[in-house]
Image (cartoon, rainbow, N blue to C red; front, side, top):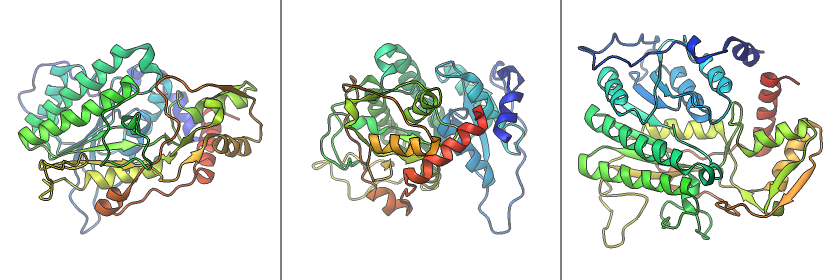
Length: 380
């Protein structure tokens, strides 16, 4: 299988084709990345920085941009939050492709990011790198401050000084926190987060608005809803459940299974990201400071939910997975975890209106794709 071969090839990140950023500001930018041939009449390729390129969503977005002929400068620090070999295997699918260059770089490296923006001169940035995970934010809160706040600040500064045309960044459905109004809308107030992870994502939205207002930097925040699919993260429920069921071990089912999630397939997430990237926001002439709408602004700033708009019961999610694996799960029912919410559902009206896209992949289609990839990567 292609995934198994890639995994076997990647034994250390030292083997990657890495664009090192260890010297001072270069006297002149490096030679431009080679441009893939374009069909007649197609738009000019964009030069895009994708942070978190070795991560789950960043890998898929990078692939999609390369497929359509864009040039991608991928950034990742390849940290050990989860299995580094999985990140390296994702990168193995990207390195060597025309138009792709990789920089092993930490977002907290202010000078390194400044050098990269000065050298590469990206037109657009898709910022997907972050310290993820609601529950892990209870164990290691400082990691979230460094990556999600300091790192985002450095990205904003790079975009500001680099004249970037559009910054698209990952927010999260977690920002809705204690909100009980469903479906969750970008027009709702989100001032009551219930985890530090959510608070850092809300802070990112505020920081982005500040730069949109002060410097005219067009920014768009995307609130992702429970993303799943091939090449997913090992700390997410589908991955954890699959591994445990195949090993004959019990799975932890929180809130005694009484939970709903707006599970969103990775293909739908990528489609949404790319469509939004191509739609640079402009100031909203209808925005009213007296009745301020959180989802838009008099500055070039927008927020969108990307979710399936169809919440699924957690027990139904597990049932579909059991059917795909051909094995029943031993369920260990537990109370709701601190920082968790009972239900999520995305209002995607603005996404449909502005970029003409509605995520539509049901779990009955998406979970089999994940299971097929899991078996091809890890073996039967």
